Length: 256
Image (cartoon, rainbow, N blue to C red):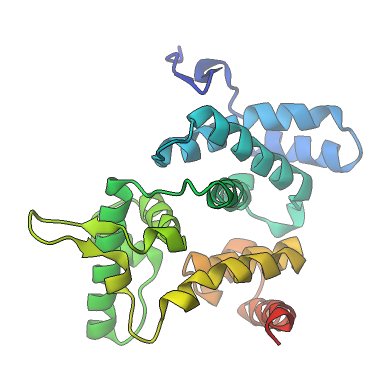
């Protein structure tokens, strides 16, 4: 028996959980023109939206509003998902849902990062710095999560949350003394203007196809290596390299 938990007016106990084969079958039917299953796909994946909304704490922004925006991201993910990617739908959908919510918050000047996310991000950045000093190479998300004894998903959410330029002047950690600000933890070669430029980067990403966009997000926003992406997509590292290069060249046109 499922426990009833109501979030954003949704009784989570009524939300069905689909098996991978059932999910695949619905997408096949949708892509064959059976639009009636689109609503079923939305309903069965609302937990993705609820979990993301629940991870963020914003002032002056109602959870119900974020839920509606997140559902727009979910719809976009459903309409653009390609079974040929050979990845779970949730892996594809979560970045799109998060991106939709973040754009909404930027447009409405409401972006704030919760204290718990800032703490996780700070610990992850310090662990990354130490790892590079010891191994002369950048750690994977899994290695960072292991180093700070956190779940991989929590580290990803925290690092994604601090990417927004409005969080640079917010304190990310305090042990009772002076607060440490996010901008102080960015290497000297990365200026605030460069960080803010990530918004332009995200705009130029709209020109990419779904596979190119997924690779860029995984490489430069989630910190995955080409080998890791190749394994998750079921293609070769050389193919990832070519796709990444073509995507970067396309994005560069906006900055010439």
